[in-house]
Each structure stands twice: as C-alpha cells, then as structure tokens.
Image 1 (cartoon, rainbow, N blue to C red):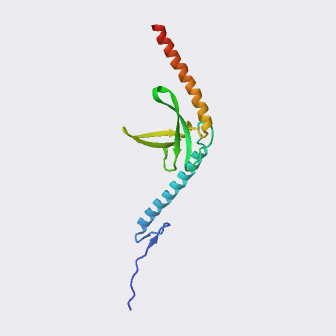
Image 2 (cartoon, helix red, strand yellow):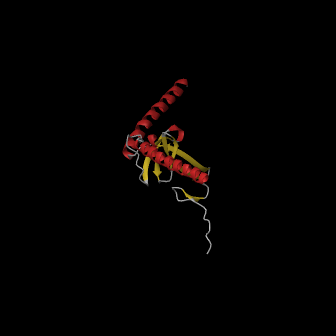
Image 3 (cartoon, helix red, strand yellow):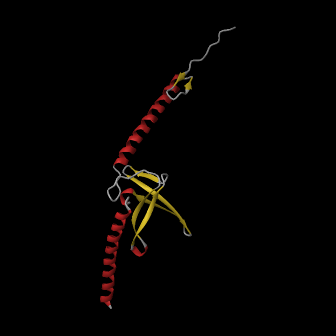
Length: 154
C-alpha cells in the first residue's frame, strides 16, 4: 500500500470546494456580497411596503386575490370605475418609490398592458364610488360649459 498525495481543498460558506485558494477566496467574496445584497433588498422591500398607501390612505395589502378600484378617464373622458385584481404575480417594482399592479387584457385590438400605481387605487369600493361621483360631477360641469359655449356661438 502506497501513500498517495491528496490535493488540499478549500471550502466556501455555500459548500463549494476549490483546489485553488485564490478561486475559493474570490467565490467567497461573491457569496458574501450576494447574501448582503439580498438582505438589503429584503429590508428595502419591507420598508417600501410599510410606506405604500392606497388613494384612500390605507396600507397596501399584499394579500393574494384582493381587488382594488381605479377611477379611470373612460370613454370620451367620462370617469368610470375599474376593478383591478391583485393576483400576487402581477406586482411590479418600477423604481425605488413606486409599486404598481400590472394588468394585462386581450381583445380584438391585441394585448394591452396597464400599470396601476398603488397610490391611485382605492382599497374600499365605496370610497372609490364616492370619488367616481365627484369626478363625474366635475366632468359634467365641464361638458355643460362646452355645450353652453357652443350654444352661445349659434
């Protein structure tokens, strides 16, 4: 039985083994930095969620299958109410201060993608309906003014 030389191995914190110490050190730096990145991203996400309020001043709930409501400029500018479902997978972080619900719809005209900012959505349907009525009154006032101006020209 002969004695054999076994190459020395260097293990990193993620369990990988390297025969070259320098490669192991570089990999360990990557693992450590990656871990720190994910920890800070998690802390950032939690802070963002704590500060994300709906249009009616309620904290956004990340509960799956919640519905939110959006007062939209509908056909010919007449405000309408849209229900915006939150399905869990349709949330997008657009920048460091904005979370949106991305809604995709399909019709004869193709696929349409709309981003709804959380701050523009109402969590309470009744509050959204009240805002809708207010916006419709404003719209009617403007329409009435246009009609009166057109009538004065005749």
